[in-house]
Image 1 (cartoon, rainbow, N blue to C red):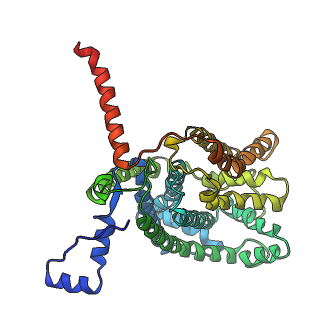
Image 2: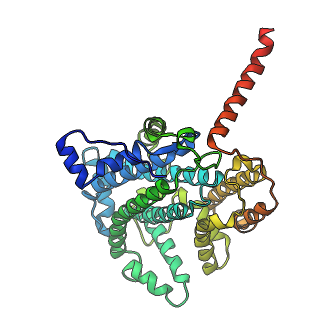
Image 3: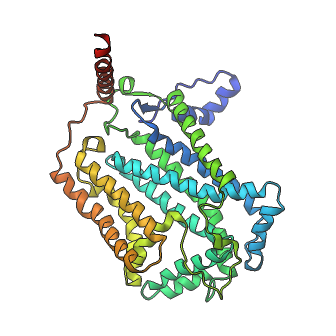
Length: 424
């Protein structure tokens, strides 16, 4: 599905350079002539939004690193120095801190869109797995970044999460001490987390490159889940059609992002993180950032420590096996009415787990977490395999052009029906 470049350099210098390093032709074939399905909706714009957010996080993070010191006794003060003394330091920090949340909002929409329209099905299995790897790297990067302000929630969040590795038999305690750089969370821990937090975004960028490569090789999925049969009839060039749509969606997303930066910059954070880290005072309720809460709820729903850790990591790992767990031959939920119902139940369960993860681990919250956790795994391991066997999907269009034509005719019939009585 790679687009064939029609780029022809005009000047002699451009021709000489293109014959030795055809980078302009590569960009042209990938971002100009590349054919995209003509029925894509705005849910397909989040790939461009995520690419922009990754660049935004890397640039703002590099600037913050110029003023930050990864040394426990002064880390908290250095963050306050950035906020108060560095020119526009408050803006850069709020862009970076809220950008992490915006990044996860976009990636969750991107993932749920892929699950709804079956973008993980053949031949896009490797594309989906690369996306899961990006998600894991994002989670690791976000966790380590949350530790760097060295506030109360940073310190105790690092203590709780790193302690989970002690549940691993035989080598758990050794791993924890290696992560800490000693026998408790301290200056060596902060220094290691800062180094990894700085490194991992560039690893994410590398995997994103592979993700885009895999996408351009097999082609984009679409709301109807039908492959491109004819480039002329089923697709349009990426530029200007997809480019304009992506740009518009990005502007809307940036308005939403800016609202958080300038009006409620601390809304998604925790007030305890404005208290310097104190190993002798434990916060009343330790919670991670909001985008980890569903997995935190799964962790706490299992009474055994090792079992909880395994359940939490299994909840993420099971996503990589989704292409084989879903046995249906039809990709899009648009033609799978029964799957569509179960999908929305699953979405509600994920949101419910996020809410339960923010509540104290007691009473009815624990019971509800266990019920939702069981359903979470049942959706992947029981419901999806069985749906492929018993569900009767609707007829799928033969091509994207047929789906678009049928939609156009349907819209025309609705307009005609609405206008008919008026003309009589």
